[in-house]
Amino acid sequence: MKWSILYWISIVNIIGTLIFIQIPNKSNFPKEYIIPLIMSLIIKYSIGDVDKGYKLTYSDIFYWVYIIGLSYIIVRYITPK
Image 1 (spheres, rainbow, N blue to C red):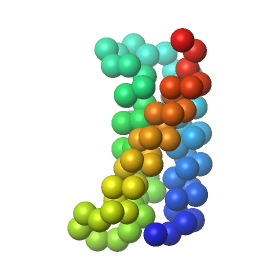
Image 2: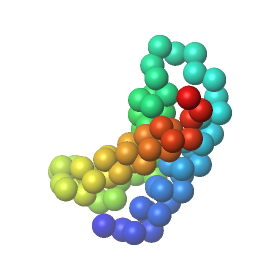
Image 3: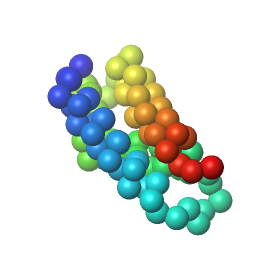
């Protein structure tokens, strides 16, 4: 696993989640679900994965859980009730 990519994933995830929290939610989806989904897709498209190849590995599972989990925790504890 490349730690420099994980560092940039964390930075982009935190900043992007904080930006998306500021946008008013006009959809039928709760912010706790839609923002982590949006961030995971943006990070996958812009930064990529932590390993190479198309085979599913444990690092891929960690990658998705980390991105979605970090964004979910930020949204859950930063968003006013």
